[in-house]
Structure formats: C-alpha cells, structure tokens
Length: 356
Image 1: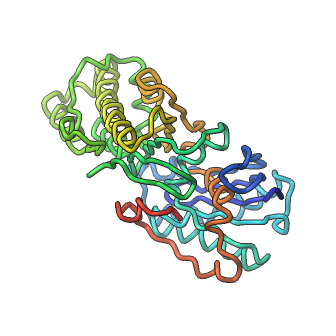
Image 2 (image 1 turned 45 degrees about the vertical axis):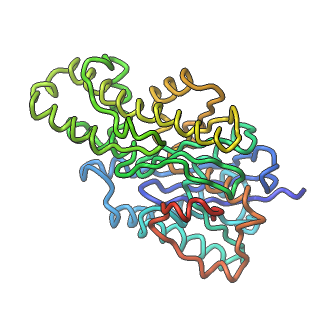
Image 3 (image 1 turned 120 degrees about the vertical axis):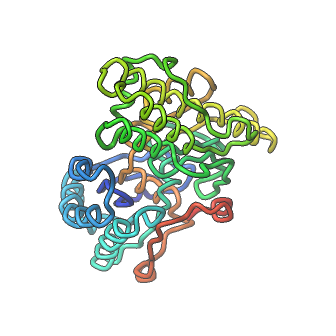
C-alpha cells in the first residue's frame, strides 16, 4: 500500500500546531512516522487575561501559522508538492481560531490542488494513541480536556458512541477555574498537579458530583462551588504554602475521583453490550495529569494513555486522524474549498453517528 505524506493543522483553541507525518492510510495501518511537529503555545500571552480570549487567540494563530508550516516542511525535508493530504481541525472549538487554520489549509490546497480532510479533534485526541501503540477496536475511550470530558465506545476510527459526558463543566475547566479561585496562574492544571505531589489529598474533603447517578455522566460545578465556599471561610489558606499544597491535592483528588468512579459505570455499559475486558484509552490535555495516570492505572487493567506530547491540542493527532480516515472522509479538490468550521459538536445524536 502506498504511503501518504500528510500535513496536519490544529488551531481549535490557543495552540497553533503543524505536523507532517508519513504512513499507510486506514485503520489497519502500522504506526505512522512523525517527520516534524512544530507548535506555538499562547499560554504566556493569555496568562494576563486569566484564560483564552478568542479574538486574541485568532490573531496569534494568524501570525504564527505560516511560519510554522514553513518550518515543519523544512524539518520534514519535504515540499508542499510532496503533501498528499491536508488534515485540519474543523470542529469543535472556537470559531475564529478554527477558521484561521481552515483558511490556511484551503490556501495550501488551492496552490497545489491537495485534498482536505476535516477533522473532529475530539476523535483525534483518542486516536492519537495509534501514533505510539497498537490498539485494536473496539476500545473504551476517555477524553479529558479543557472543554470536554466524555466516555466513548470506539468501534472504528469513524464510529464513536457516547457513554457519558459532563452536564456542565469539563475536568480541565474545573482545574483552571479552581486554580483561579486559589490565585494560581493560567493554565492552573499543571501547577495544581505539581503542588499536589507535596500535599495531603485527604486533608480537605470536596464532593464528587453525580456520585449516586448510576451512569457515566459527570458534573464539576459542585466541586468548584465547594472550593469557593471553602476559600471564603478559610481565606488564610492561600497564604500558607503547605496548606495550599494540601488544598491542591484535595481538590485534584475530587476531580480525579469522579473520573475514576464514572469509568466503572462506562465499563458496565460496554459489558452490557457484550464487550469484556476492553482496552481503555485516555487522551486529551488533562490526560497529562500525573495523579489521573496513577489512579486509573492502579484501579483498572488494560489502561493506555496517549503520550503527553500528543495529549494537548497538536498537529500530530490531526494528521494521524486524517491518515486513518483517508478513504472515508477526505474531500477532493476543488470540493474541499467549500468546507466550513463549526464551534459546537457535542450533541448526543451526532456523537452516536459516524464521526467526520
């Protein structure tokens, strides 16, 4: 089978990322070769705002996308004429940033008549496991990121069935918004993880949302409210280094504890469908969290985590997903110039259909 060279572009939020990979297309393909991966993070720029500002993020994507594409092609030792397929995130995400990446892909397509494959970056988060490991279908997937948290039964690169999702905030939002309440910088997840290693996770008690729901749905609004109320009653905690470490450990324990609990219900759902001992795959930015990795690995068997460098939004997962779904989802030139982006995607009726 002919190997394809794919250029992946990711601009769904605040990370601008471009990757060139080469490999056989399709779900039965071997692990692809990552020829170049170049990214630019806006964390430092957005820190003073305490979060992502869509207009600022889009402007920075516009400034960085062309140099990153040029740099990635140079590192991969290929030219634009060598690219067989363009993979680009089209949903879900912030509309301005998404359109920046999509318009860059269309410009490249127009120049060399290259087909484009629109990518759902949620699916790409999970399928990034195939860059480093050989995982068979079906598998049980958990996506934990700044904007999404959900359990999925993955039957193929284009078949995703939702088992449970958050009814309010995602796990990553709970980390960042909780960190803001504690006076930590943005993004707060990494600092909470680091501080928690020096703290006592049982020092303070925070609630686990939907504990008695009997399903795989998540809720993080309650734990944030509980943290705010705790800080109002104990304002001196943020001025004591050890108390802050304990607070971070306890708060993180509640966030991860819910993911651990709800995994049990997700497993029960797939077992009811006749699937036993499925491989568990965890991806998304929060999958970098060391405590989450420890807890899930110790609690459940057959757990695989996407490599940290492919957990956050990155071009490699986009290029990889485009390669794996080439036959089903690629749109030829010039029809691909009509592709549009959409900010929202998480509707159960859509998630239970084939993913494009």
